[in-house]
Amino acid sequence: MSAAVTRARAARRAVTRITLAPLLLRSGVFLTALVGLVLAYPVELLRGQLLVVAPVVALLPAVGPRRIWPTVVALLTVGGWVLAIDGYDRPVALWRLFAVAAALYLSHTLCALVAVLPYDAVVDPALVLRWLLRAVAVLLGTAVLGVLLVELAGVGGAQGLQAVTVAGLVVAVLVTALLGWLLRRR
Image (spheres, one colour):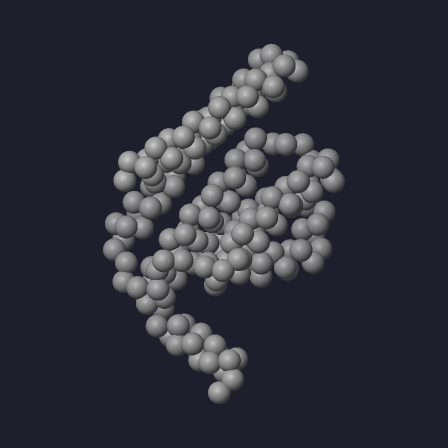
């Protein structure tokens, strides 16, 4: 029996055995990846074939969260953002920046959860709720810190951008040190 036939039978068996929680979580991965892609890319590109390709690309991490697809979609999203800002001179809107960042984070964290769940797992809804509440807390904290840093950027004129860069680096180092300390504490 060929490898393709074996894979097709395994895929058919997985589809027939899938339960509601993994299906909903995979739908969440698809939706967050799609929202991130649509918000990141410029409208001029979305009018063309990219509008047809974006749902297919967003489906890849939902189907294969343990593979390279979540990383590929995240890189395509960031590439679309850079293309829109640099190539199409789209101004940086704070709401769009936060929305793309939130979509990237939610897609990433949902892929992490889906990657450890089998297709036919029976999942307690409290587990999913705690996972999502933790993700929302991270997003809210990031949004508050981001708005504060953006406000700091406007304080010093041209020098304000340098202060925000240094503040962002300090926050990144502190978070890394905290995570390292927490890891050693175990």
